Length: 618
Ligand code: AGP
Image 1 (cartoon, protein in one colour):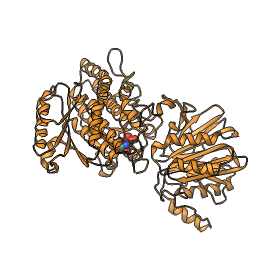
Image 2 (cartoon, protein in one colour; image 1 turned 60 degrees about the horizontal axis):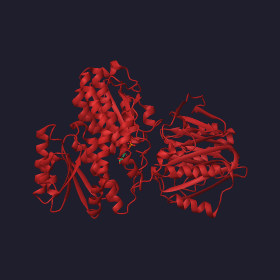
Image 3 (cartoon, helix red, strand yellow; image 1 turned 45 degrees about the vertical axis):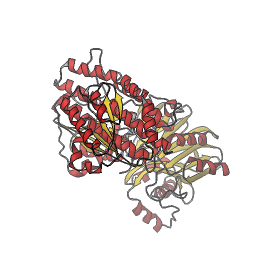
Image 4 (cartoon, protein in one colour; image 1 turned 135 degrees about the horizontal axis):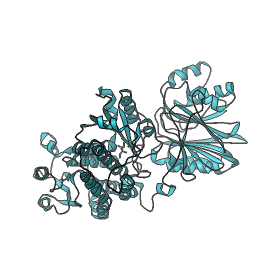
């Protein structure tokens, strides 16, 4: 989704443009297909924009340098209305070039407004919805005489999701932003201030940030930040400190962000566990600001999420139902609100999201809250919309996840939902304290176990290299191995662009086994033989069923499970873990395999085609 950065400093210099271009580089992971910048200095407003990646914009700036300035705004666009062309790239200027605007989101009433403006003689230069805002803003600026009032007047007329940043040609010391649903956060500097679609935009310059609420307008100058609602009333703000630094958002010597983030996983789990238990082994989730009496009365949990986050929810279902004996439904967020779900005041909705900005999930939690449910967000991005619009946020501490394909956030999401389940069990008295302590002690061992799997990555990479021409891979799993199989398939689809499908192993004989032919690679996630042995034996049978039909059986199994050896072409061993915690190690070979195979094919591992890191449109 679009990346946005705004900067205002005290003196006219080259710094504003440098800050903005560096931020756009850091925001590339959000996925984009054009980019642009606008600067304002004593000489007024100047801009540059180009379709393609940032290097195209850099080429344009080299050919036609912009003047020095004291404020600048930058944008990377992920095309929604109008193709990825130079003229559809942001910023968009008003006809008189008095104001420039960048936008993230969709203005749902842009057609009506476009007709109104055309009737007044406005000529449009692009096919975008955003350009409507530029013309409306110029008209309001002329009428009201200042950009904040003009922005408030325009924002009140807009429908849909938007983050807008605007500058005026005659005021180089001010950047004005407005947000409804789409992300925007303020960076607080010394003699300079920032606006960004997420903290990665300005983390290189400050770790002090202000989160913004719904329907707010923010005005930054070199020495001030003011926030109001769309009516102009001052709005409360909350300052927070970003708990990671710019170095965390760079590759750290790895070939790709995804490689780095796979290796970050032990820390992601460890940091998500940190500080959430007492020395006596009791859970303390201070951030879970929902009345304990209500949590005790919860009679159903609904997880809403998309993609990998939804698969984390599937893992959570097995654990929470086992520990708490509360029914857990896992719903794809984009399906949830359209199926008339049964939601009551006793329903606890858990929204899982790395970015905290996935529009499908945002809309799902809004629907849930309208139905009277309490919502807990399990998110990785502080100050994000889902965190702010939920009743409580249980943060994952995976650090910035830059690669589009989620890895460390997935493990952190699973870890956080385990903690939520154990907390509910503790509160409702359905598990003994020593049982909870036992699970927590096992969880504390998981970072080292994950590291053990990562250390064996060489053999997985070698297999991927040999299989780089494969056209289809199937993934099987049972119980918590089933969502692991789904996630392994998704990783391969989104990274290597090949057909991959995850199945519940028991489902195979009900149709999918027809897919098995000679040489068909099939990954099988085998549950611990120390858990439910019937489960283990069933999966062994499934391996034999596919192998008998020619499948290439690639097995993920617990170290010491010698029963798999006779049925597997290759075995990827993972450390012994309790059944419910196994996904934290079982998924790692599948992540490494997909990352390595995509690399072997020479594909863009961090920014796969057609994908965005955060899907901020429905
Ligand atoms: C996972 O690798 C994908 N990038 C995608 O499925 C992602 O998990 C999904 O879009 C949800 O994103 P979120 O966690 O930011 O809400």
